[in-house]
Image (cartoon, rainbow, N blue to C red):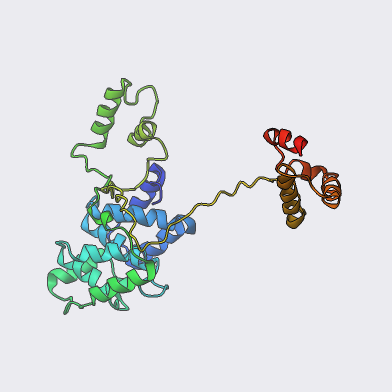
Length: 304
């Protein structure tokens, strides 16, 4: 969500909505000229809060609702990011002129609607000149919006708005907040604003229009014992080390023949050809340590 408007921008925004004799298209055009295009969404979000919290009067709400529609009227249907706000407003207890305006914006607005002012709309409704109410398919609009924008958390609808309506005046709010901080409100040319106090208290990162929604907290699922038919997951060690095989390249038949002759030599005298074969094999230093000759067999070898 975008950060809140500055006090100067908020004052400029409220001044746009002040004259209820202006036409809807004139105020919508003035809105787009007063704020840079990159700031349109931020300012429109502020309008949403003013509408939802009933912080402005009925003529100003009519201006604000039309601005939310006018910003994205050239886009494809269902892509207006403020469409959920318009739909939720229809479900509230509204003045007849406000309800008629919303239903027109959600269907096909009359061509002369933008040429009228809130004062004219209220007068027409009071005189019964509005005609039959349009009946837009609200459910189809919601489904189209969800398909285009994706599913959002349902907790957003149950969250608390961070905007609290102060029953007292702004000066009284500034006084109470300054008294709690131990500093005088104003005086000697020093400007003190509620916004600056709150920014210093909560920090810029928290100073936003984000609501307070319930957190989705649930315990992690417990581990189930593996079944007999499940595959075992093996985490192989990727840290390999080099191992040297000293017997690599040896002839196994030659080693086995030498061991057989050494066993015979410990039991009986060998023939001359066999003795020469043993001596020739022992010339290979690798076979000496693997021929099976141990200290216990040396006496038998010497005897025979």
